[in-house]
Image 1 (cartoon, rainbow, N blue to C red):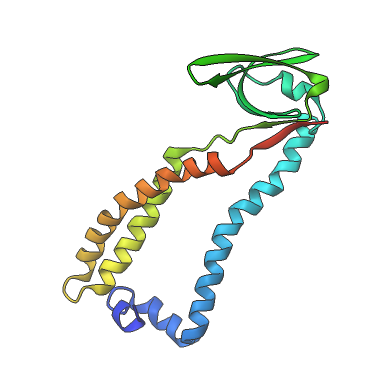
Image 2 (image 1 turned 135 degrees about the vertical axis):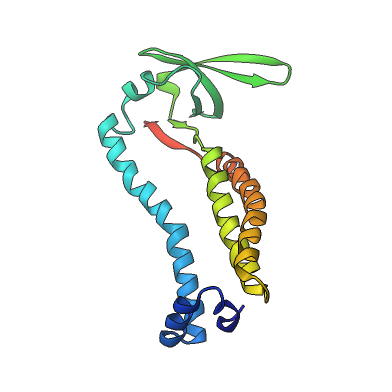
Length: 190
């Protein structure tokens, strides 16, 4: 894809971009913009986490654990790591349930044995699917519009519709990887 092909669809923007930036510089700008978009959300999430810890009383405060709703997915680290659902929390112990093959197990873990508790991430699959659909539609519109010699506007519209479905499917699968690879937020640490 070069500027001569995209000139039919995006004439003014392409002329301005071509006038100011050389070919090598364009790639650098594109890669920089991509890096800012990908890393920006991560940096914002990390900068907000300490403020939330201060409001909740920090990572060593048992009252945060006592305020967990029953059914919350957590990861408890003692001398082993357990993934379970909160059932009840008292001043001295945590009661949570986990599933073993063909049975359910209730764990009663004393507070003195707990080294760390993490809350499992809560991904929003619908939001990620919509974001994926938007990205797919944009990519499909640009590709179809720039590759077309006849009716680039119509082909860009059809390409946008065609790119939205695979984008939504891929975006909908992103939360699966978030749950698998993210460890969750620490709410209690001793």
